[in-house]
Length: 183
Ligand SMILES: Cc1cc2nc3c(=O)[nH]c(=O)nc-3n(C[C@H](O)[C@H](O)[C@H](O)COP(=O)(O)O)c2cc1C
Image 1 (cartoon, rainbow, N blue to C red):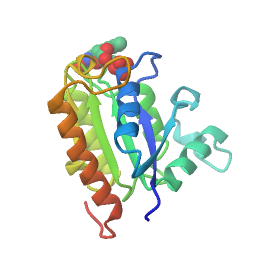
Image 2: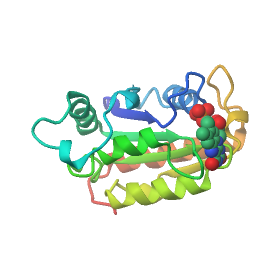
Image 3: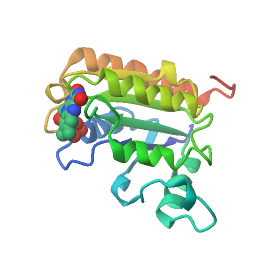
């Protein structure tokens, strides 16, 4: 039997009752036979990105985050949109990886789960594309009115969203198992 793939999930919302956090829990439950999903919940502990600090004395938090990304077979990013953009704490975390390329050829799945979300989704897709996240254009989903689609027990109660997420997880698994380079 194949061992479960190690996945790092990053939630772009740091809110306690976050819909995106509940969505990650729902995804972990749906994919528990194939993925071992670890939640990265330390976005607020990362220092503000400054290229001048990205040197041999870079903070331990940053090194730890990079290490988790390196070890993971794949990354799931679930995020809301804030003011038609990407939440600052999530973008800050990604900026810490640009010089060290942890996302390069890393199978990465992006879900923007927001009230609307289209602007932040496009922006983050472009960022993940430019840092070479593997197959990102086939591994993305925008879920609008998200708070009505995931209940308090972290169950996806919208059948369309559930079906789209299941298909996305299949493509994510295929991408992880593919050895070829995909732009
Ligand atoms: C500061 C702020 C700005 C927001 N801006 C947007 C926005 O531009 N577009 C949108 O779709 N939702 C926006 N929202 C609503 C969030 O998408 C919604 O609250 C979402 O459920 C938050 O995700 P979470 O539950 O995972 O925290 C905003 C919320 C906050 C707090």
